[in-house]
Length: 68
Length: 135
Figure 1 (cartoon, each protein chain N blue to C red):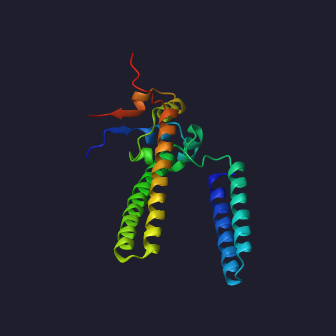
Figure 2: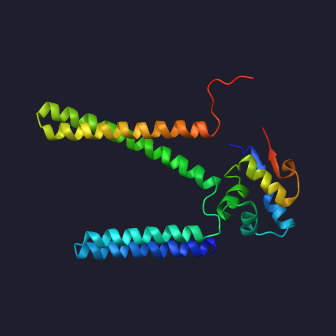
């Protein structure tokens, strides 16, 4: 089955020079959760998605993509 | 204290509890086993409070919720069926012990369903469910 919600967190992390650990600390989750989101195995809550977008100072739509 | 340090301390506490319980079993001393467990759990609680790293987040809560639900379904159905089997066997053979055990298990099943229903209702209310709300 094709993934409906994908993200560019890995790319954004590289741009901002952040490790998974640093991003996890910044948004208040465990590193395992960041790994799961990056691999599209876990869909974050809207609140967490906004927190991630705030860390990267970009809009939600640029970081997360929803495809039907 | 970071997450890795916490994990290491948690492992040490688990080893301490296991060792205490093992020694308690060897010397047949139940007080030592309880003391070991209480000390270990209290220490773990203190360490958890001191840890600044995030130990539980929404993904872990999600996983825990799913695991708890699966455990509830499996256990309730299993204990429910066992209670029926014991009651049936007890009535057929005339052994009151079986029937008594079956009745106890059926009450445990009811208790489990009651706790689940109450906690479901509580969390449902907490997270916004209202009775037939319309605009």
